[in-house]
Image (cartoon, rainbow, N blue to C red; front, side, top):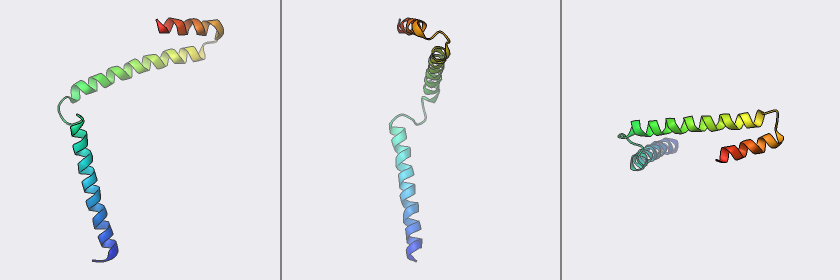
Length: 79
């Protein structure tokens, strides 16, 4: 076996071990099978919430009446 063949084999083994460790780590953290539907629902709700917040920020940033109107809108959003 040549030196470069040994390097390729060692790289393949290390990659396989690393991938297996990542898979086990993901399952350990709760990203495996099981509650995928619940997690997906939570993520969709969070994305929808973030979209609403971005829309408000875009409206504030592009508003023509910036001065006191901007301060009033920020105070209204804090409530």
